[in-house]
Length: 95
Image (cartoon, rainbow, N blue to C red; front, side):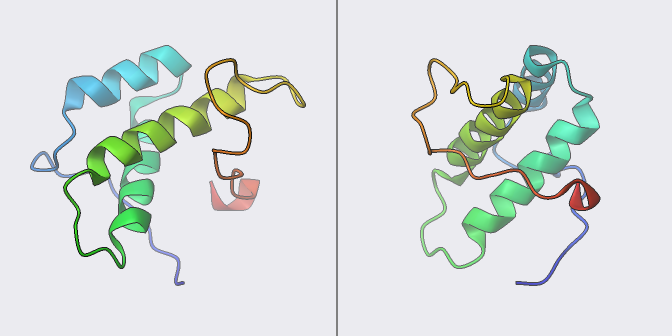
C-alpha cells in the first residue's frame, strides 16, 4: 500500500464537522489531527470496498479508539473498547 498525505475531509463527506470537533475536544487533540486521522481511516476502509454506506461511522469509531488508545496508560485497556479491536498506532515518523 502506498503512503498518501491525507488532507482534511471534504465537507461533502458523511461525517459532520461537529462530530470531528467533538472527537477533538473529547481527546484534547487538535481538530486538524483528528480530521487527518479520520481521512486516513476512511481511505483505508474505502480502498477496496464495494459497499461504503457505513464507512463514515466505522472510521469515526476507529479514530475514537485510536485517540483513546493514546490517552490510556500503557498496558491498561480502555474500559469501553474491546481488547485488540483498535489497530496499533503508526510509528511516530508517520504521524
